[in-house]
Length: 139
Image 1 (cartoon, rainbow, N blue to C red):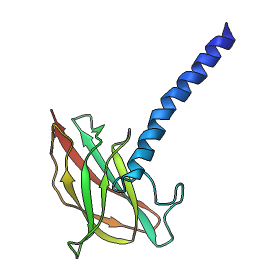
Image 2 (cartoon, rainbow, N blue to C red):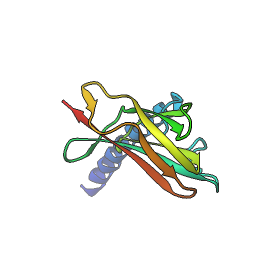
Image 3 (tube, helix red, strand yellow):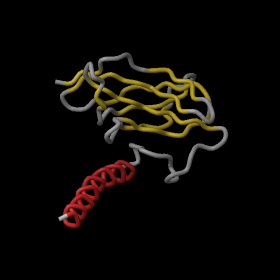
Image 4 (cartoon, one colour):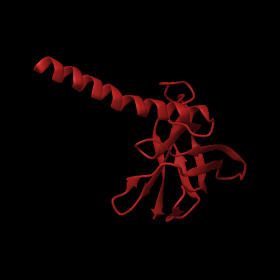
């Protein structure tokens, strides 16, 4: 009895892990969403930090996927990159050289509206993760 139960448990775990992997790869293929650095598994260079964009909804702050943002330097309006929050964390990350950045919402998921100020200024420091948080109000 234990052996069939063990096998079923393993198959259930494998089935649960596959959709998460498929979603993260689909986001990487679009060029606009990033769940990891450009080199899979590689951390930021010595002079870089990680910019994390986090979207949440509700008083419980549930993660929210589908928020699009544009990232630019604080002293320039030229967009450096665009990101879209995804996955079970409702987040997107990108490696950037240290400095001041503006993260502005460019699109919200269907049925939602932005419930926090935009743009958000973030100081990225080498070797650290800096977070730009956005709150969404969804129906």
